[in-house]
Length: 427
Image (cartoon, rainbow, N blue to C red; front, top):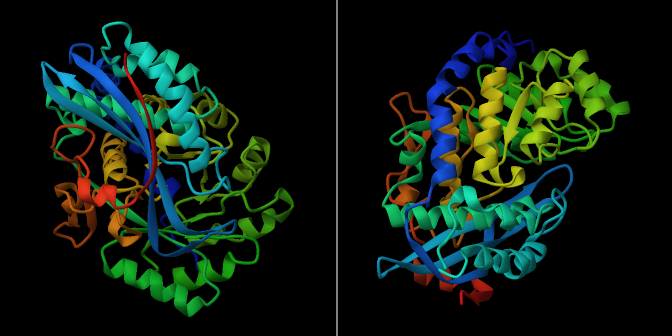
């Protein structure tokens, strides 16, 4: 089962290129986001939070939970620019329960509709001018331990300013027109033939990388079966914190499978256990749940707890934090790939832009949302058509060129799935 090309070898020599690529482009991206809205003149009239209820096409099983539905919290800001109506949208990544994050949709809905929107209105001042994307410090302070909720508000502000300035997010960051490779995720399965069949269908659809969910008792056998069936496939595994360090032998047994990385094997708080496993294995260790801020990323890298970073913008605290992590990893020569949280077309498009900024070498969890979601209010927009196959038959997603972080939702589709809403007027 030995496969000669691993992620460590694939990355060899690319770290210096990543640092050079970042020089200029990344600094410009950080400055551009920070200054976004300084001159847009967006006057806030109302801010609201909505919850929509979406269904998963089929249950997604991991070692710790099963996802059957996808409620989503959305932030909507409404105002005017030069007397013209204007708006902005943000999406919260909080899931239906607290299996992976302390913020679920109920917590996020209450927090956004309460402290965060009130803080945003206050930050507008007497002139009701929406703060620039880099001027949300007091809003962030209102929910310092709640990155997912804050990230949704930050996104709505950024989206509003981009629409006011008639610029796309990709153009702002200097990556407009870029396409990035798409990876897929496959949940655990009791039957190996079923698992191999599911991976085979994904490979047939053009996915160049597949991430498998694993857990104690469901690791070496499934990985071996998939690797033997697809010897050239880029493959990585995600344990979602399901192992203890005493079960490290089961993870070490995967060393010959040619995996790109093993993601989050142990408890997110135990960087020491991850560092010890990293020293023991050739396969790179990747962290996800442990990485809740740029500072946490730096701490994990310094501890030797990972050599690959799964970047989830919302978990880090939003777009500004994601850009900062991409910068730090590029400077350190550490590969970054974009993780997913079952986003709609809107937020997945934002992640595609950040993937383009991070670089093309590691496909992210960027599968088309219509492959896992039903009822997405953005599924009828042009952005839903950004996914396609390149000349080699590989699935890619392009960065969008419409103003904003993404398109406006289809209003009738949105209203049909709204389950509750709350708002505050700017006075």
